[in-house]
Image (cartoon, rainbow, N blue to C red):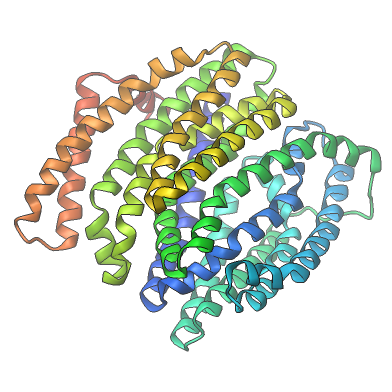
Amino acid sequence: MSLKEKAVSGLLWSLWQQVSSKLVSFCISVYLARLLAPAEFGLIAMLSLFIAIGHTLLDSGLTASLVRTTEADQRDYSSVFYFNIAGSILIYALLFLTAPLIADFYDQPLLKALARVYGLVLIINAFFAVQSTLLIKEMKFKRQTNMQIPAGIGGGILGIVLAHMGYGVWSLVWMGLCTSFLSTAMHWIVSPWRPAWIFDKQLFKKHIDFGYKMTLSSILDTIHQNLYLIIIGKYFSASQLGFYSRADSISQLPIGNISAAVNKATYPMFAELSADVVQLKKLYKKLMQQVLFWNAPSLIFLSLIARPLFHLLLTDKWLPAVPYFQILCISGIMYPLHSYNLNVIKVLGKSALFLKLEILKKVLSVAGILTFIHFGIYGLLYFQFAFNFVAYYINSIYSGKLISYPIQDQIKDIFPILLLACIIGALSFIFNVLLTGLLLSDMLVIVFVGLVYAALYIGTALFIKLQALNDFNQLILKR
């Protein structure tokens, strides 16, 4: 298989893996949202930072190091495996001990018990981290998909049954634990790899020397991503946090899926081309345009049909989340491109630069959050929108220098796509307003607006011969 075919296949399967597993999770969460109160989702959102930091500390950048190590063998994988197990137990013990402090911080006594039970996912997930890394390294995303979907369905069924039985927020906790357990079991069944009784200190030191900078960067990013949840959970009600977290999770369906798929697929691809800057630049450019070509219209469309979508799926009790959702969708248009820039920096071994950029961006972000918190939740949301463009600009400057692809050239390549998506979005908004006077059902409004947007967007792209669509025809449709 050629590099071009491998790139396309890897990206498509990675995207399908993300979309299919998240779609299952989304459908389950929608059903649960109809059964549970916003405040119960808010309680789980309060724990998200601590679980996410636990996973980041557990990874320690070792996954990225294993993927970029071309000659990794049993000694590498076994050493990382045992570190993961020992580290997960230590991190869970720390979470167990600090659970009362978390409950006191949010003034939610129930969080003490929730944190101590939900935190067990850290230990469970540690048992399949290496198997998952091997699948990513070998770009076997189809196999990952075939494990993630059944695990998500199994956990979801348990969560729904418990919610019907009146377990409330605990149904979400046991659903998460069950999903992790099933995923771990299937990785051990499917993957032929087994750890040997080996712990090579020298090899581990090599991985940790690269990984600790990535870990510090990831911790900063994790805290930053969850900072809004912390602030809203601390200074506003659990219900408002529930509205925000639900809006964020639905907006992440396209944003997070595309970003995660891009990150998984492009990192090993970029690693193969790390010695050929010219080819790396060509691949970077094509993939950047492809992601934006599909991501921008998807998010603009979701913002247009936000109200009928929430009314149809989640019922009236979730309608206060609609304006949050619309702002988050628009602010996420540029987010997947961060994965490209950061992957370029990582595969070229510039982990120190990676860390410096993360520190710079987080300092700017925290300063902005402290400034705009005085304007309430909407002040935070509008700042988040603006900062995503600032972060992309910062990342692009440095990654562009490494592959001779300056920021002005990148903007020139993506501007036609952004302009087209915005113009078609404005026309579709006018059409959407006209439909509101016809008293159509939510489903009909979503379908009509979707058809109009898709027809205008694709039709215009074909008419003006947009480069991204031409590349799609050549790379994917092969014509």
